[in-house]
Length: 63
Image (cartoon, rainbow, N blue to C red; front, side, top):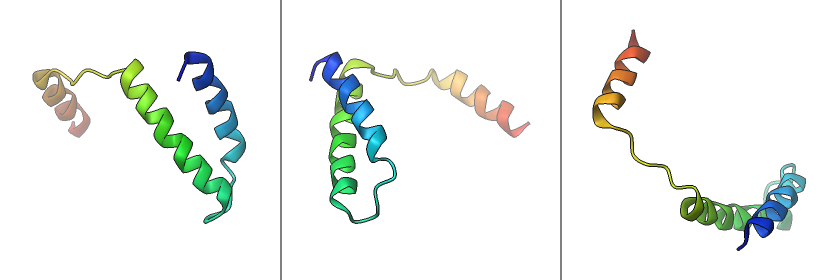
């Protein structure tokens, strides 16, 4: 999938967001969601957090 394909798929998925449960459109949305997730994992990886920073962040959240 190219970046242009990715953008087209995202735009198309937006039109499917109100699909009825169990409809073919919902199934199509689920399929495209898997494809987009795979593309994003490959092209926009998220590094794991620094363990110390993660602990400090969580402590800050808890007050």
